[in-house]
Length: 207
Image (cartoon, rainbow, N blue to C red; front, side, top):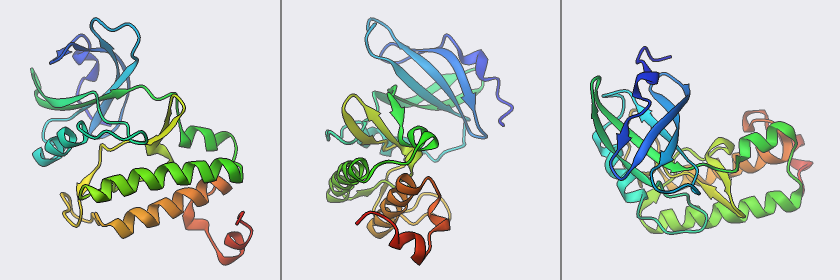
């Protein structure tokens, strides 16, 4: 866990009228907050604020690009940027509050073959859109897939230009996205990580 006092950021108003309202959780590099949009009582939002220096500046520029995406299966951020605070320059990423994540669903049950087909179709279309623009999703997992209204969407907060890593060990290729899609489909059908896949389990999956 980070030693940054995340609760001290509550009440901060980000450009565009996004108020950091309630601290929810934190990991090593970021804190998650409920966000209130001033003047908008109907849109629920959530935001991640990052420890100063924890992400490269190029990542913020990629977020700005993602904010311009218009695709029914991609949840473009509402706003992104860097805010000056008493603890330094804090990058932030604000998005609509998802109704639920795919990871949350499969903790309770596996998807049916029909549901898995719907998920696969939505994710394939989102990835095709990204790839056509020269980007990859990079971190496609059930945790980065959300239901927003009646749409199944991916979150583009880790997009990269194709074959252009920002951090050591990254493989931002279209092939890696396709592999991640296959792993995600396996997991939603079995409630097991793809690392546990075998010829026997694969043979038992719905065609």
